Image (cartoon, rainbow, N blue to C red):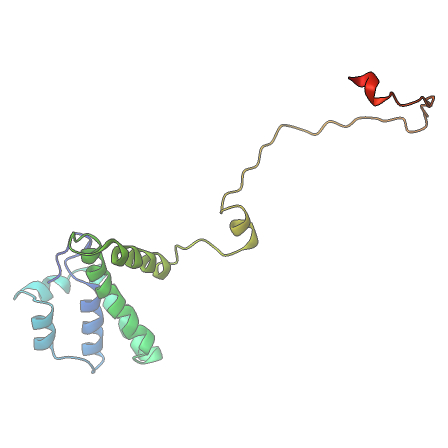
Length: 161
């Protein structure tokens, strides 16, 4: 059974997915599921009383019925499990910083948390600041008045020094 600190339930999505496959007549046997997920003798009974678990299993069953067992569904189930491995590697002191950085970048990408690639974000580094100083002041300018001036000689360069 998966009791890692970042799972909020005592069961994983993969267990719900495996149970949905079993109930739809494909996948592993109940004995294989119990062994692989390291379930105790009463765990399945307890999970069958959990409305969140039942809803998740029913959701997966509906997807299997409607779409069949697609590559995308398999990849999603596998990705859920690989996040646990990624988390462990990122927090391991034995893993190089480059590998940790790649795992973090990948997780951000998979989670859809990358900044949008539009012109505004790339031009300004993704930050836009607007300063509002109140209403603009309008000035009246009389464009009919002409100012005349006399031409005069330019001062010599020696006179300016």
